[in-house]
Length: 207
Image (cartoon, rainbow, N blue to C red; front, top):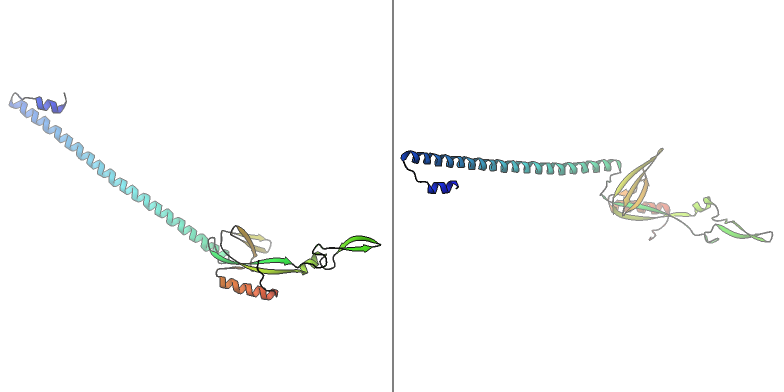
């Protein structure tokens, strides 16, 4: 028999029993009320702690985001200082020099010609492009402006020589320090292009 059934079936026989019944009933209700209040208090405390924990987690997440942002900005600032005013992610314009060699009409750039020696035909060095020095004299440069976003940077130091390596469009470009051909605007790159073409003494060639 549970408590409620006991209370409903209980018939007090005298005033003492009535008082005892009322006392027990009041005590039980008081205990139940205290238990409910404790549970409500624990629930409120848990809710408050959950809110505080959520706030701490959010503050930590924001702190990590700000830290990563500041770190990236510091990296970019250092790169721009050491990488000639450019950093990974920057949009740049590159002046690309392409070295070409004039075609030799004498030997069709084979560097060899046929000559007859003592009635025997033999191969001989082409008098126009047969040596490395002569081939160098036949070389000329054409230029191209390349627009892209820097994907990677690298510095190369060999003895007293320094080069900067730039990657854009999955293509690597290499420039000697002090002769950088990396520009932040197309107008600046165009000026350098015009100067290079004028110095070379050739016109623009479409590549």
